[in-house]
Amino acid sequence: MKQIRRYLIVLAFALAACGGKQVRREIRLKDGHGIETARLKAAIEALERDRVNIHSVLVERKGEIVAEYYGQGSDRTMAKRYGLGNPFAGETVFDLETLHDVRSASKSVTALLFALERYRKDMPLPHEPVLAHYPELADFATPEKNKITFAHLLTMSSGLEWHEWGRSFLTSDETQLLWKSATARFVLNKPLVSTPGTAFLYSGGNTAVLADTLVRRTGKPFEEIARAELFEPLGITEWEWAKDSSDRPLAHAGLRLKPRDMLKIGRLVLQKGKWRGRQLIAREWIEQMTRTQIQTQVDFFSGHGEKLGYGYQWWTGTSPHHGGLVAWSAAVGNGGQRICVVPQLDLVIVTTAGDYGERTIQQRVGRLIDEVIAAVK
Image (cartoon, helix red, strand yellow):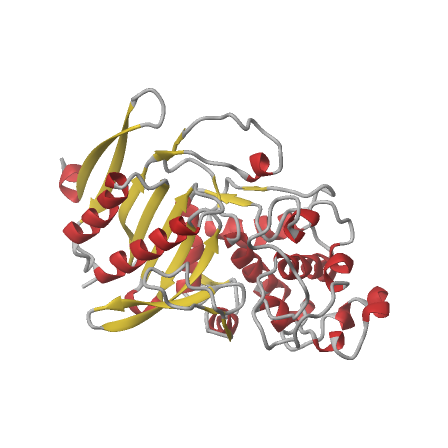
């Protein structure tokens, strides 16, 4: 009975895409914690009503999960994207134990790995030139390319040509990352299309070079670093990382996590890199990572059409809140994946979804973020 009193449980029924089958979906809402429960409930139920392909929504306030929703929908994992797995698999019923692609939110996790306290003395500082750490690429060292720093890679402002958004699978530079054994050579050999540090150009290649540098400088496999220095301290025990043709994790897009573990990533960022008394990531790095370092022209991740900023592999923006604006930073992935951190409200919001390649799902998730923030008293 105590558990029943503690939670308001709302059961929603929806027709699956095939055969008219009824599927039970559950929203758990915890009262209190400065949240307008009815308003939050309505925002999540609207996803059901509008048949949005959202797989989960989790809201954590002041360290407590105050809302948790899991649904059913179509999905396409990275394995299916690259021609592996069963392309005819139907809908998936999601729950708290289901691993989910986080897609480009992987970039945001890679930014955390790049700044682990455990390896700070081994890693280059943001202002250091990238090519200075790749002497074997001296043939690329023009005066212009010598200006590319790790900060430029982190902020997607390296100036290197890259074709990813709006490209088909066959014409995307992201796809070519799968087959290149020398990742840094492939990326850093691209021509410059702008002066480093002056223009935002989204590039999984920039993230791939960050991951390559991490492995080179530490002498340890990328997955082992993630496991031992980030996931295990956070209590993340079940995860996957899709790999390229050379058996290296796709640092820019391949991570799979459970939604509750995505919350832990958000909580770590909210706590300025500290977890249970241990400083995993330097506080000053988190502050730089979640601060706007460059402006973008990207507005389709926002619920109200705002052109977002970008930090170190984390997006930055604002949401309306009681007549003003409240700032947030977010890890964002293709298809509707989101880890949104709102320090002013001690709030973390996580979503997973399955409309890959569609801007409308990102806009809808952006509106949901706005609605959740507005429900905080």
